[in-house]
Length: 296
Length: 276
Ligand SMILES: Nc1nc2c(ncn2[C@@H]2O[C@H](COP(=O)(O)OP(=O)(O)OP(=O)(O)O)[C@@H](O)[C@H]2O)c(=O)[nH]1
Ligand SMILES: Nc1nc2c(ncn2[C@@H]2O[C@H](COP(=O)(O)OP(=O)(O)OP(=O)(O)O)[C@@H](O)[C@H]2O)c(=O)[nH]1
Ligand SMILES: [K+]
Ligand SMILES: [Mg+2]
Ligand SMILES: [Mg+2]
View 1: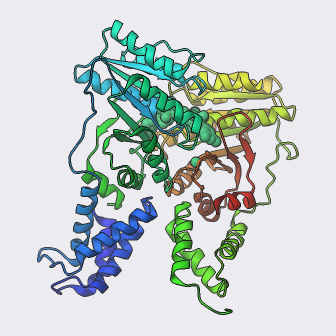
View 2: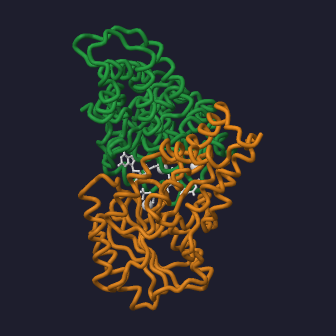
View 3: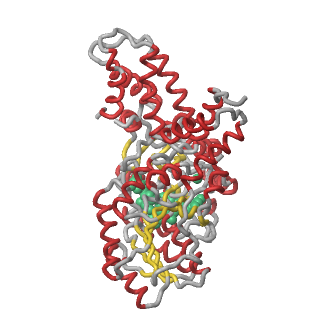
C-alpha cells in the first residue's frame, strides 16, 4: 500500500539506519518528498506549507521507534496528522428540524450535484426515510429531465418543476408538495454556478432563507486543483455549509482538494462519490483519504 | 544590480504564483531554475512575470490553424468529443456547432452518450438552439451504432460538419475506454478517415489529474486537440502548459461560460496574461 512515497522516504533516510532520533537535517530531506507528494496531489500551496511546518515540529527530536525505519516514522507522523486534519469521526447528514426537512446541494458546474441527489435519495430510503427530489436548476438544458429520470430509476418522487419557474419558488412550493405526498426529506438540486457569480450566489442565499435547510452540502469534484480553496471559501462564506461531498473518487485522482476544502471551511467531508450509478456513494473515511493524498 | 541573484522571498512568491495556477510542482521547479539563470538581475516582480511568460510562451504556441472558416475540412468533417464526467463536452459541442453554423455549414450532432440521464435531451436542446440536425437513438442503445449511423446519415444528407457527443468516463475505467475505441472504430467503418478530429475536453478547475486524463485518452483515441473549459472562474488552467509541453497536443479552444457564444480560439498570450 505505502510504496510510492515510502520508497522515496526510505531512500532519503537510508543512511540513517541505526540512529536513535530524527535530526533537523534528515527530517528536512524527508519532508521535501512529502511536500512534493502533497503538491502533486493538489493540496493547496499554503496549506502544504503550514502542514509541513507542523509536521517538522512534531518530527524533530522524536524518538525513532525501534520497529520502524526513519522513513516509516516520518510517514507515520504525516499520515496521522493528515487523518486528524481531515476529521477523525464520521459525520452523517444533519436531518434535524421540523419535518419535512431539506438538504440542499450546491457547487460548481458539473461537479456531480444532480447525480449525488439521486444517490442520497437511495441512501435515505434505505434508512427508512421518505425522500423527495427537487429540481431547482432552471438554467442547464434538460437539468430537470435529468433528475426526473434519475428519480424514476430509483423510485423516488420528483417535484414537477418547470424551467419557467423561479428556483426559490420551486423550493418553497416543493415543501408543500412533499408534505402532501407524505415525504419527509427534500433533496434540493440547485444549478451549477461559479462562486464568483454574484447573482447566482444570491439566489442560493434566497433558497436558504426560504426553506431553512437542515444541511447544505458542497459537492466538489475530487479532481479539483488549487482553486478548491477559493471555491470552498466562497460557498461557505455565503451559505455556511454543513459539509462536503467529494465526487468522482473512483478514478486515479489523489484528492488533495479534500484537505484544502477541509482546512479552509472546517466543515466535515460527509460522503464520497465513487461512480456514476445511483448506489455509488460511500461514507467518508479520513484514513483512506490520507493514504490516497499521499499516493499510497 | 546586474548579476545579482533572485532573493529567496521573490523566488518563493513566484513559486506560489506558479503552483497555485496548477502548473505543477515539477514544471514550476524547472521554470524557476531556468529563470534564475536567465533573469539574474531582475528584481521587479512585474518584470519577473514577463520573463516567465516569455519562457512559457514557446510551449503554448502552435502553428496548426484552428479557425473553422479558413481551414480545409473533409466532407463531412467528423469531430468526436471526449473527456471525463462533467467537464463540459455537451455544452462545448453546442458552442462549436454555433461556430460552424455561423460559417454557413450544415451541422449534425450525434447523441452517442446514451448512458447519462437526459444526455440526449440536453444535446437536442443544443441542436435546436444552433439550428443543427441531430441523430439520436434510444437511451441505453449501443453508442458505437449511434456514431456509425450519424456519419452514415450525414453523408446521405450532405452535412458538412458532424459532431459526436460521448458519455463522460473516467480515463482509468478500462471497459469504458475500450467502448470509446469501439465508437471511434465504428465511424471509420463508414468513412475511413473519420473521425477527422478528436477533441479532449478538460475542465480548467482540474489539478494535476489532467495529466493522467490526457495520457489515457490520447492512448485510447488519438486526441488531436484540447478544449479547456470553465476559464471564466478563478482557476487559471495552468495544467495546459504541462500538457502542451508533455504531449504536444494543441489547446484549440477555451470555454468561458455556459452560453452558446462562450467558446473562443485559444490565444496563448491572452491566456498567460490572464494567468499572472
Ligand atoms: N465517475 C463518476 N462520475 C460521477 C460521479 N458523480 C457524478 N458523476 C458524473 O459526473 C457528471 C456530472 O454529474 P451531474 O450530476 O450532472 O453534475 P451537476 O453538478 O449536477 O452538473 P450541473 O447541474 O451541470 O452543474 C455526470 O456524467 C455524472 O454521471 C462519481 O462519483 N463518479
Ligand atoms: N462556467 C462554465 N460552465 C461551463 C462551461 N462549459 C460547460 N459548463 C457547464 O458545465 C456543466 C457540465 O457541462 P456538460 O456540457 O453537461 O458536461 P459534459 O462533459 O457533457 O458532462 P457529462 O456528459 O455528464 O460527462 C453544465 O452546467 C455546463 O453549463 C464553461 O466554459 N464555463
Ligand atoms: K474555473
Ligand atoms: Mg445538475
Ligand atoms: Mg455530456
